[in-house]
Image (cartoon, rainbow, N blue to C red; front, side, top):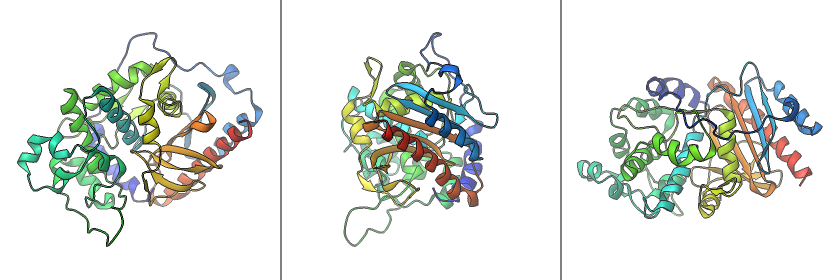
Length: 360
């Protein structure tokens, strides 16, 4: 992830996190992951990989789920299992899950619906805005064609009194001479999904997530930042326990099933985590990096993987062919340290994937 992201998060999200919702409770007795036997996995090779996390100074947690069981869990440098951690842009991937639920429920008709049709009042106020013509599919795949540069505009988006209008004021980028619209990492475009879902459901994005996604998984605590218009931010701002982020990653790795319940449609999970467009961001040792529906895609240790990628190497990675999900949380680094931190954490994740390959 490009290096200037850290500085922008530190400034642009300050106001958002100041409006963060407090941890939300659910019914007592909600299911949780079982404690690892003896506090460590029985597999000595996996135990060694968890210990290797001590060598990555920024790492705060590493969790490994295999075939529905939390087989590895370790926290570093004072982090704890109960602490909420900002997952940064992995929030986008959670938003994608809610879009899939909304399609399954018929609240959204299809991915070809446009912003103008889904936010008609805003479209009427700005009828010439290019954003009005963007489809849900384009918002999800980063191909809206709207010009946006997070290096200069993220802070302005975070402080905008009307984030919808902010997105509507984005011009179209110059069209390529040939070929498809290129992928662009566009927080403002993704941000439109929050008011779209709120209008469709009659409740805020965070409330929808708590009811329809978090509660079935026993996710009892979270915080979600609100923008100045009072909407939960779709592109960043969610805080979760690492264990609960692992639940979301396993849900996707398991085709949308949690226990006996089909929480997400299997077809949506598969479509979300396949490559729709190539992505320009890279992180070693992942090969063939692409983008699905707000999930990065690629190949690791010869296996297809998808992952949510938050600033600072907050990773929620799934390898469905291995029955594997891997979650990491880490500190937000200074810009100049970000590439090395991303690579160090993903290299460790790659070793975990290699461990699972060896046991497949």
